[in-house]
Amino acid sequence: MNRFLRQTKSKNQYAVSIVSVTAVSLLCLLIRDLVDYKVIGYLLLVTVSLLAIFLEILPVLIAATLSALILDFLFIKPYYNLQINSTEDLLLLLLFFVIALVNAVLTFKIRRAEQIVQVREARLSTMKLYNILLDSLSHELRTPIATIMGGVGALQEKSTSMSGENTQKLLSEMEKASLRLNHQVENLLNMSRLESGYIQPKLDWCDISELIYNVIDSLKEELMSHKINVSKPDYLPLFRLDYGLTEQIIYNIVYNASQYTPKGSSIQITIEYKPEVDFEYHEDKQLTCNITIADDGYGFPEAEIAKAFDRFYRVKDSKTGGTGLGLSIVKGFTEAQDGKITLQNREEGGAMFKIGFAAAVMHLKGISNE
Image (cartoon, rainbow, N blue to C red; front, top):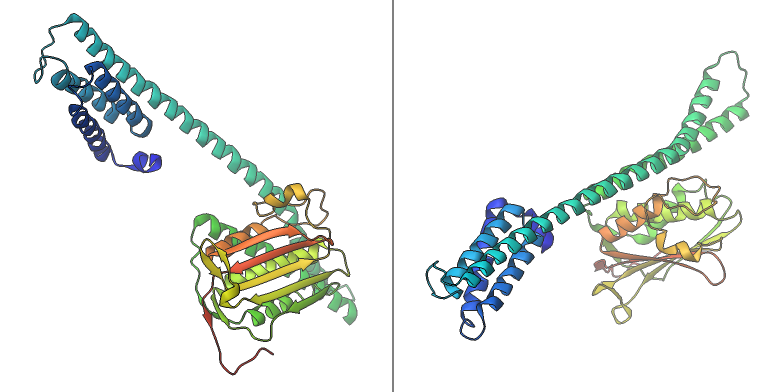
């Protein structure tokens, strides 16, 4: 209501102020013979005060003036003229008008001061996030770029005699650096899409099992020192999802697990399709496709689990690099598809993400998962 009225055009605000005062005055006419006109004055004063909270200063001043005239014309004897026979009534009317004007002006100034404070706080918050992002990128982008440039420089030096084995190692390091760089750039682009509100899921029938195996294959270098297991039912239907957004969700979580868990640890991915009788619900929507990604690493500090999906969040004292955008993007992409994501620590150690999508389902008869 507040936001709506503040965004209303000036002409409409004048109409709102006039209609509001007129409507309250007509209602007060019904009780004119039952109460003293001073009570009516208080009701009109409250009306002006409420309008001052939502409208600009000029419409409120008009409301204050109109309410004073209506109070005199309809509620102070003699009725239906602007003549006032009593000095007391004249003073009360003038006092009403002054109080209404002062209240309107002060409320407007307070609201304007609050707006200035909010703008200032928003700027400070933006600058803080900007500095955090720059500090993070100064390392996260500089490192892979330096690796690539150093490798290219070494390969271009004709005087350097490099064996085929060393050349392959160098090319492998350059490839890893380029993939890391691409991952960070993708996260930045995805975050800008989320911030701009331009995420429009392109829904299509997806084989969720194939999608997950594609993610694992794209992360084979990162997962070489980890054990990864995928558990799924014998039958899975196709789910109507945005393939690209869903792939990025799984990619970011599995990538984080590969970076923040010790070597030799396990990552367990479980796909569930719950028949209609077992549906879970999220905002009255049936969660048909459920994915759980769990690891046996260190988990998250209990006090920080609620912050894990915030922009630029990183576990304190973490030696692993990162911009802290990955999980924020995961949450944004999940919610863009009317999904739900939760995070909790496992009792036996490690973290567990649960992702649920309220996706349409298509059954393929006679076809089973392989």
